[in-house]
Amino acid sequence: MKNLKIEKNKILDKILEALNYHNEKDVVVDLAILSASTKYAEFSEECQRFEQKYGIGYNEFEEKISHKEYKEDFEEEDDLMAWKFAKDGSDFWSKRVEELKRVL
Image 1 (cartoon, rainbow, N blue to C red):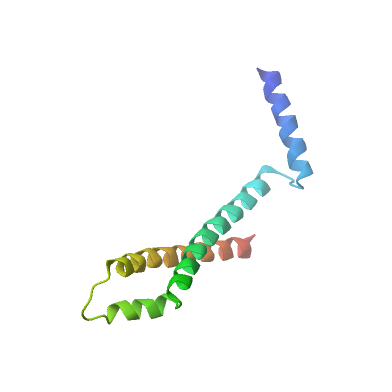
Image 2: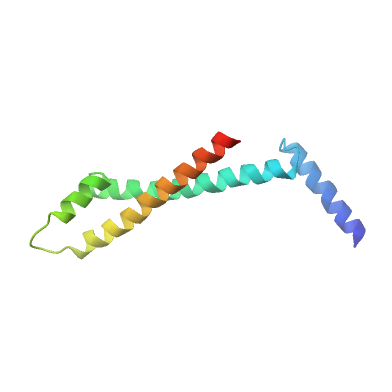
């Protein structure tokens, strides 16, 4: 059992060395940046889909929906909520990525 653990550690050390990592902390840092960047990209892509669908940005779309007087459009209202969620997520993860890059 102990030999298996030693063998695993040797293999892991070789892989980390081949990837130019000097220690486990470097791996964790890169993983955090990668994960935060992926989250940012996912939310940003969702925002872009709404921008393409409606041909305007979030703020203009929100203004349009808030000034509608007569006909309710449930699809647009649902899209507004989803777009806001995506925008908030994009803003949040963008800030986390910048924070990570700034301190590392």
